[in-house]
Length: 282
Image 1 (spheres, rainbow, N blue to C red):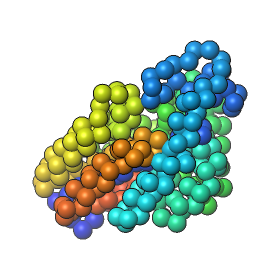
Image 2: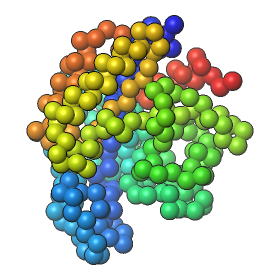
Image 3: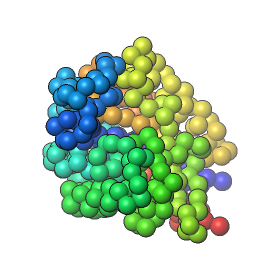
Image 4: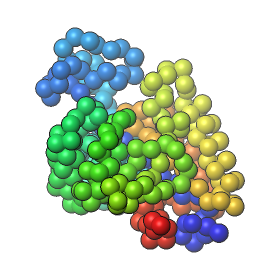
């Protein structure tokens, strides 16, 4: 029996990360420049890395329009895991996200490591992200994704802030409930293995290989979904998949998916709301 609406066998969540403009930078008062660089160059001196800053800026200027055009052409709604500051500084992108009725999930106030924060600092970090996104988008985020690592306080603080779901988990292909200080917290697992960031972290990983892996992942979960419905997450980045040599591979993936009936392509907010309504915590 399906867990999804109308008997769908697979829920597909396209997750578009918006980090550009909120990464580490001397210009923003950080101790050093952003270490994540497609060239694999890590600058250890406290100087501005203008080249890498421009690589991130590409995601907003050129990558975002391509990604938005592709989603709109296929009538797809996605979840934008956005660092609040990045959205503040990209009003044109924010407007297109709103008009497309996509979801914005919080990816922090900035795209920085919150695992180094104490409880008070992390509480302020979360509250600032919520306030900023609500002001930019007109509605508050109900989901949260940290940059890589979370703390022992993260889920408690998210619960205090009224979040519906949390993404910092990679342990399953379906949502599940956790208990945080006696209160239920819904976890919507994410996926790193199919994430397009691997094309940055491993330059030898080609778009064709990424597409093959994404399709193989979809096909297997779709097959399993005939008897035990599943959820698939596909992580994307404006500065990665939005390049002209890569965006066509995302289109091929979408076209492959849309040839299959019984797939619910939706936001994580809708997945979480459906799960909470039909599979409440015990």
